[in-house]
Image (cartoon, rainbow, N blue to C red; front, side):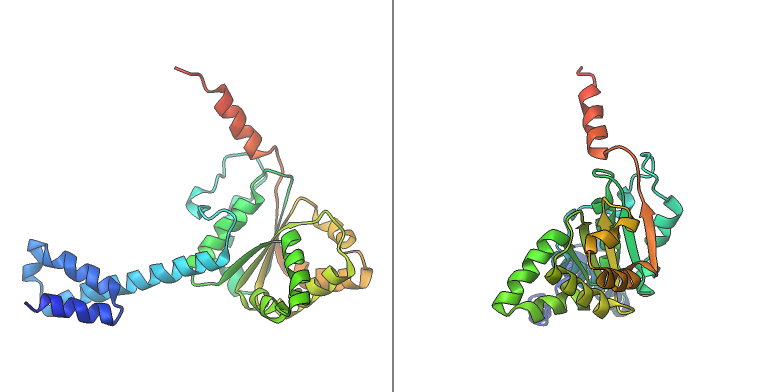
Length: 252
């Protein structure tokens, strides 16, 4: 008779993990011999796990990743695209984010730059790091609108306070004066405070021309590149390779 009032109290306290564990343990014959301490331990373990899962799911929703399902366990090291396996596995430890370092992933279209960035982002979310993904062209459009409607301080804060900021698809269009100023403010506020991950089809040595104005370019790249890891990918588009494999699969 005490089960229902106990469950109601656990629900009131928002201890949903304990509710699930309590319900399951009640139906298992082997739990009869468990001591009170063992019961409590199982309940608290489930609650801890449940809360960790909810926090991870919340961070993933906030991140707004392009490839939500990109997971480190699924990284393809076999395809020839010049992916440095040792370096990438080092990046998966998350130490580069703890050290507030940056990461540049460059290479031609279709080699998996964005997917790899999202896989690293998922690891960061698992580790309790806040992440924000933005395609750079759309971000500049958003910032332009935010300047006009008064939302800029709020948008800017979200970009500078997150633990890992992913700027996808750098270039090839040259930045205008407003975009240069906004980018400078973002990288300045994040310098030694949070990590930036940039993906681009352009090699890093061309980024100076994309920024345009030499003084801004020097200042921005000095803050982004000097402490950054680099993954320089190469090879054919993985999309085309996989499509060809499907097309050549014999039909039984």
